[in-house]
Length: 232
Image 1 (cartoon, rainbow, N blue to C red):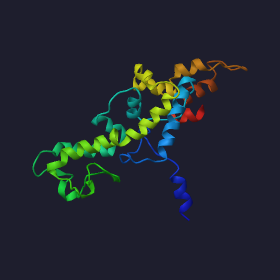
Image 2: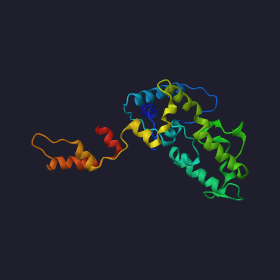
Image 3: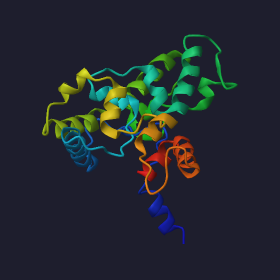
Image 4: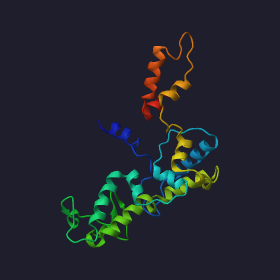
């Protein structure tokens, strides 16, 4: 009885911090690369035609699109829980007898694979390499690289290849990540009462001071981003 619900759940992605590719093992070709290439074409064509997409890309992905390199702090917008754990690891790395949430690093039984992706080895034979204080800095660095750069290079490469079929992605380097999001989505600005009021032209006996119009303005100005998209 749970199979239909499980199948439906697997069709959707929950990404409160924006969409960012899941890591792939280096050299592993998957069907998803075809989708990333198509997505690149779609975003490129939408930008060229000045059409908005309801596509909440992560800030880190937008930075990649404008040619900026990603670094450790960007992990906070991709995987906040992982970032928090790695921050704790960085704090105790290089020390002796350091504890992570009350446990010794060796007692966590970590190996050199990417958390949540056991098929992604951070070093050759990583499944058989234990993580301890002696290699904790290396582990933090490799996990960061696998999550932000090395592990997603194939997906972003396919996305860029599709985008470049429409126009060269390098032309986006004149924008900031925030400006690029505005051009892609077009709904990042807040709806303040003055903006909403200027967009409404009362008629049929109503005017700017009519109580229903004031109610509408206050209601629309209080909408969050999701409700604004649904309204539009």
